[in-house]
Image 1 (cartoon, helix red, strand yellow):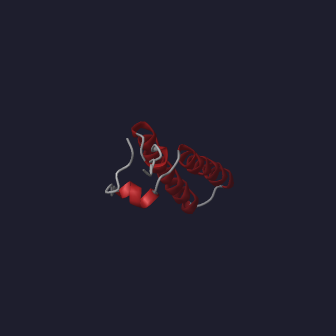
Image 2 (image 1 turned 180 degrees about the vertical axis):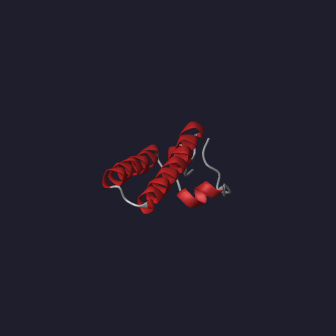
Image 3 (image 1 turned 90 degrees about the vertical axis):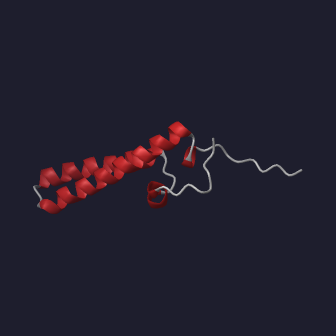
Length: 84
């Protein structure tokens, strides 16, 4: 079950074809940034960046898991173009 050429979902346009590790990396950056923000007692900007990284990582991870389950995006089977 490959990906159709007419698929125009918003997350495909916004995030492309992410892999699972892309979402995990974004979430790890969010956690590291949270630790730095809490330890240095920064103002609200640090927490805003943590929220942005966390939301971005969560959406990318959700898209990647959806693709992996349904065989789409980066997890689609390669299309073989056999010449006769």
